[in-house]
Image (cartoon, rainbow, N blue to C red; front, side, top):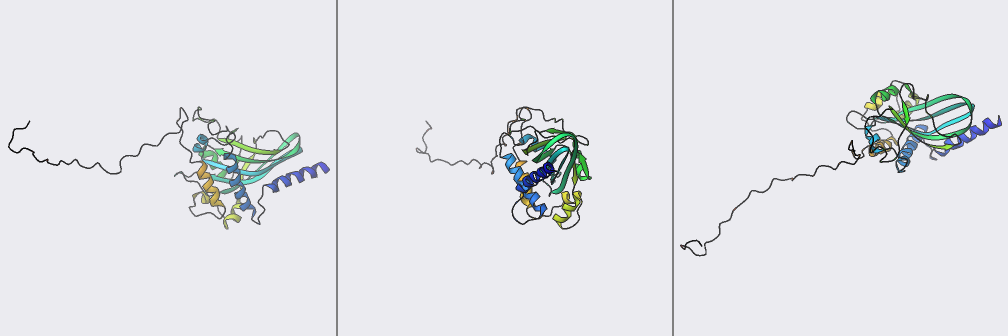
Length: 266
């Protein structure tokens, strides 16, 4: 009992460290923390999500402060947001989601992880929109390559539908998301938007979202607008040189006075 209480206290303490001190709602704190996770992840050259993968992203799930605890039986739980790339290339307002998973086996410890999932197919994103998706079951998941140029020489064909990135603190070694479920949190969406909204309504809406969501949407837009990579070399393509903005002036001639009128030309 003492060990269980200790693990619970550690997990609660670590989770509270990622929550802003200001008196804000749980959903506002989730959005703020999601923005912070993206900024910090992309500021680490050796750990950031490559531009090439972000350019291909159809959706992003950010799960700040996901908790994993274990004492014989293990559990993972947390909450976060989903943003979807619309057909015109813009990004949707955040849809609140949750995650949960259980495990059986010898394990003890506690861990808090900030997790970012990059979805590369529309079908995997739509799976969450329909209610729930199981990682490794409904959609394949793999550890994502890291570093801005990590994928410069790789093919544009990806084997996994979802690539996972994480920053962990705690006692567990590694991070496995196989079997974890990602599901829509209707209650959180209703509290944040002030009315009941299904995921498709949130994704299609062009209305400005409540604060602080505009900052998160802007951050996602910023990191996914990286230079387009050449498929073979990975080098950034230079924009075409700008042409002249006005047509060239028409050539004009000016007659010159004859210095020796009537004389034969020399």
